[in-house]
Image 1 (cartoon, rainbow, N blue to C red):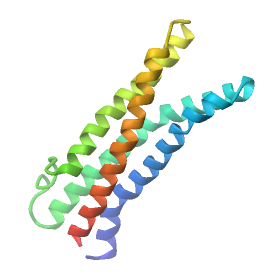
Image 2 (image 1 turned 135 degrees about the horizontal axis):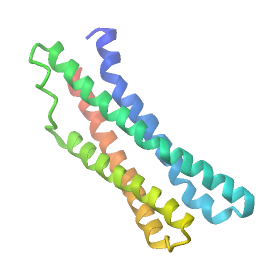
Image 3 (image 1 turned 30 degrees about the vertical axis):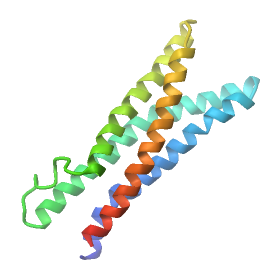
Image 4 (image 1 turned 120 degrees about the vertical axis):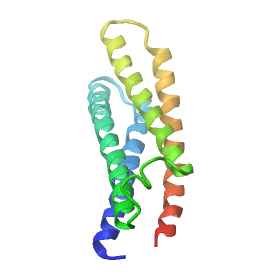
Length: 155
């Protein structure tokens, strides 16, 4: 396998690890939110919300890179673009589940902001958002581990 092929295959895992690290940073808000007060808390919350808005587009880029890598792999192996396109293993399944859960969590975050601005109760939504975020981190780590193992099958 040449350097170009290796690079194309590794784009998805590298982007995914960056996204996972970014999600860990977001999850750290859970602790920061309880220790900060006043203006410092407001600024930190604003950063948390701004980053949260950017995470979904970043996830979409990671998912697209996975599909494009699989399309390229199928073409490169002479099997056709759709050979590896559809999910066919546990890594793919955890990716799809994680993506759906990620979208739900992102949407819950947006709902918290809307409820807070409308002076409605948002504590229940905040609790669901936090639990879903923790689950995404766990699922993301499992997904990354399985992906790491699968990379060795390619070489």
